[in-house]
Length: 88
Ligand SMILES: [Zn+2]
Image (cartoon, rainbow, N blue to C red; front, side):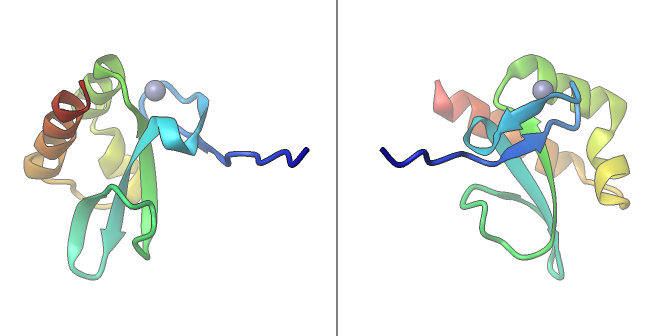
């Protein structure tokens, strides 16, 4: 049996290590900051759980700004909320 492990990433909001596919990835690229739904974009990434509490917490605490070391626009945060709603 092949044991395929999903890499764990740290959520910027709750600080838990969570399997990658249960997180949203936000990536800082040369073109700016964007939501990376493919997990393949090159650049510095930050992750948040696919949970409303974590998205809200990351929003409130500006966790992405800290993790990516640059300002993250509200537009990016809003796209997380939008994506979360799409997932339901
Ligand atoms: Zn979380």
